[in-house]
Length: 434
Image (cartoon, rainbow, N blue to C red; front, side, top):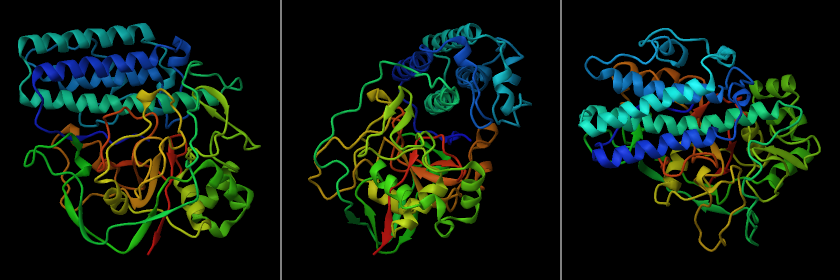
């Protein structure tokens, strides 16, 4: 599946700031692909994933289609590539079948990188000439947010592809090692009382209120009712989850939703996606590494998160509960920029009675179905396709992960995936009624 992409945009920044941001984000994507061979870049290990080469091309096609293509008299660099690198925009035109993206040996990786360079040159020229009005600047910012999401997908998809290789190759051998643990990291589970009564969540709809960037499905800001509840101070750790496995959690059908139990049996699930059978080592973007007991558990489906919560005598939080707990917290954590590319144990002493690791490390499953907020309105035209039409059969995740770009997230950010998805960096935090 995909991350949320269609967007509500804020008042556009000044041209010079946007131009610098454009260069930074675009360079980051190329840097992420730099360790890969051309063979690596065209791997597609399953229909839900896409090759690195396709991510690089699709995010470039977005700028050509929606920014450059809106300029008078613009001629496409290669008219065939709109078919190859369109994703879900049915109103734009037909597209290559998603499960067959890994068959695209042509254009080559070198040609895709050249395509990126040509589009970047044309965008830079547009900035120099002052060609981009307010609407174009908004589209560029949307394109940058979209590309940051594909940076995360590039890493998650590549990890799955490398895991499918019996050699278990590392994406990079020089990734930062696990940071030193502190005495208080992943200590005994503590509960923090949440807000109750009528609260407000969501992002204010642009342009009525000028705010930071937000996607359309985060709005409008609206009221919700919270019953008395509490959230766990930290995410569920590897050690916590190992207890579930050792207690026979994967062999207890009473813990599982019906669809989840079917998945467990069909897939022979016995632990998180990338764990070895002995539960000692796990596959990471740095290759096989020993499991850190105090780090948040990762690569769980919604079904596994829900079953663990039931086994623990708790439940998953709603997205309203999660957002209220995170609303006043700084957006700080272990992100892709920290160069671990794997969840880490909590680095700070646990001195405050506040939630920990709400942002970064692992996306946290909620019990909330991905549905429109009251008064939701998608964008007009093709850009309205990306969110609203996927509001069926998905669960909401919150908080970001260790492969999310720093500065890309906020408390109102809604990610979504089908409940069986395991290859994303997804974990959980417990909740309970008070």
